[in-house]
Amino acid sequence: MFLLLLAYLGGVLTLLSPCILPVLPFVFARSDRPFLRSGLPLLAGMALMFAVVASLAAVGSRWVAQANQAGRWIALAVMAVFALALLWPALANRLLSPLQRLGGRLDASAGDGGGVAGSLLIGIATGLLWAPCAGPILGLILTGAALQGANAGTSGLLLAYALGAATSLALAVWIGGRVFAALKRHLGAGEWIRRGLGIAALLAVVAIAMGWDTGVLTRLSTVSTARLEQGLLDALPARDPMPGGAMMMTADQGAMPGLPVEGQLPSLAGASGWLNSPPLDAQGLRGKVVLVDFWTYSCINCLRALPHVRQWYQRYRDHGLVVVGVHAPEFAFERDVRNVQRAVEDLGVSWPVALDNDFAIWRGFDNRYWPAHYFIDAQGRIRAHHFGEGGYEESEQIIRRLLREAGNPLPGDAPATVATARAAVERAADMGNLRSPETYIGHARAEHFASPGGQRAGRAFDYTVPAMLGLNQWALGGRWLVGEEDARLQQAGGRIAFRFHARDLHLVLAPQADGRPVRFRVRVDGHAPGAMAGADVGAGGEGRVDENRLYQLIRQDGDVGERSFEIEFLDPGVRAYAFTFG
Image 1: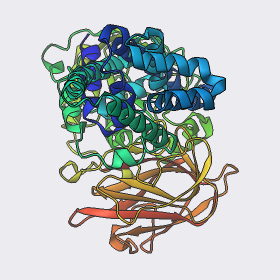
Image 2: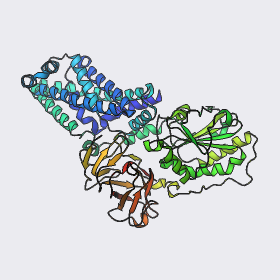
Image 3: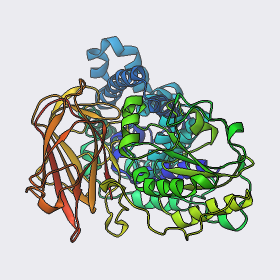
Image 4: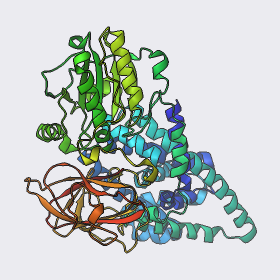
């Protein structure tokens, strides 16, 4: 119930978002009609259609994306007819003869106060066209849907979000109706209002067709709802996490006093394979204290937690502790066992790793986060959990307590307080200077994209980098094909620019499809990085993408401030997935 309320409130806040502007003319055009026969069907159709399309699109099926794109063009045609009917009813009927019956019905609905069916049709079309800015709440809902598939839970959350938006729009319709009625009574402006709404609707059609609703309007936002939404998320109880909230840093602060039983260790049989071990099962682990670590090898939060997991394994493996890493992939290349095997070797992961490519174990734990640690006692009961980074001392105390309960001897020396990082990416984040969020490049979860015209999903396009970027805005330059989870460079010389504020900048990259490396050159504030070069970059800014993984491109040791980053790829074929910071 709390999640539904949170999603509903997130939808209500969309009225403050610039991405609502293109649909307002279609909504206001019905504001002078009876609400129950006009406004309510429109808003109901809009909410229902958005929830259905967003639920299906979240699973990432290519046919869904193509069908939705076709539906958007059909909806744009319907809206254009509606706008022309508002402007010139007789002309619209003559020029648009194939749609004469539809145009006549829309015109009649616009002129006589009736039209439940016409209002519902306009609402369905609006639901196909509406592309809300993905703030923190909607982002978490869509991530959960992508991980778990379209189901009743995620569809319910999306519907609650859409109903929240419909509620705020209903208030706008109610206020607008009274304003328009007053103008008509005192100024006799009814016909001019109707034509003005027709012009606004036509402009909205043009804006959506040009992609301005998801590009320019997001960058021109003067009222941001992100802080309000984040405040709502901060009120989220740790016992009831958001679905699919990747890398949310929450913890069960009350775990130590009583270590209550949270459930039984779920089955591990859903793994598609195992590394470093034959298959393990819950029954065979009885008598052992088990740490289950959900991770994925390109996740910076997982990599920064890795030194601590490695330390616990080395310290307690001879005293009854078994560590089971559950590798649940975020990106498609992390499903390839060869990539995971290489990462396991490079990162020094020597404990058993279950390959959870189908998220079967993930669902068994009802997990939502990377990284996530579950602590299981010798009787096979989950006694504590921790989501995200941090809390390492408390986590080790839980391990020691469960080992004592099982009657196992503990090491004689005191627990180590500092874990050793084997690689630069494992170094703890500088949270005091972290002002930039994880940013995805694929169109399914992209935010703050600043190239003119927005992203052109699913087709090659020549992008340009604006002369100026605001903090946390990013852009593509050159010819790229933007997919759901990545962007692929079509020609050499392509660029990615980002304005960031953090000590470290990382980028998840993959080489060409045939495995050939891609050379790149990095610049910070227009210059070679020098001492700011990350572990995968030379001081002159040169580097190469030769594996599917996370690359550390910037590491600052001095004063940390707002900087402009740019990477230029000297060869085609690179795939770019996500920026992360530390």
